[in-house]
Image (cartoon, rainbow, N blue to C red):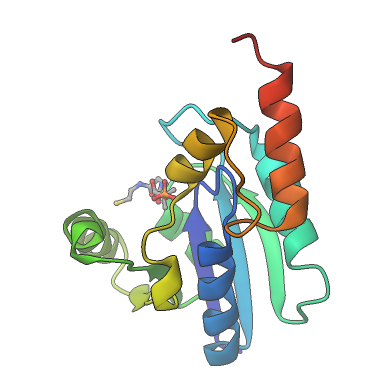
Length: 162
Ligand code: PNS
């Protein structure tokens, strides 16, 4: 059983993330999308909300499951019996941080390999941060996120004080 972890903040999940999950699911027997709970970043959505939004988006994807994790990624990966961590690389600007994280994770656990996958070109400009900004400013994000996420963004931002 070749199992991979696809970790991230997913605040919220975008079509770019889903593209990477679909690619990873073709390469591995099982992909665990791992939602970081204890990340330093303060999210718009809670970890439970982020997890539920991904679960909705990948419902019916046979070899994909969604889990929350806190603490060290390599410890979670090892406890899950995974041998790889998948990360998406959109552009050179992603590389520096990703390279540092991959090498540090290797230092922490030699058994876990990091694999980079490139999403389709039309997602290279997409990020959760930009989607939130567009939504906050009243723009339409339907092309960038699943319908359930677009709805959740509208609800969340409507409930927030201006
Ligand atoms: O979507 P993001 O915010 O780029 O994901 C970053 C994430 C959550 C994958 C990274 O911060 C992480 O792995 N956090 C867990 C804590 C950890 O293991 N830190 C050491 C990594 S070198």
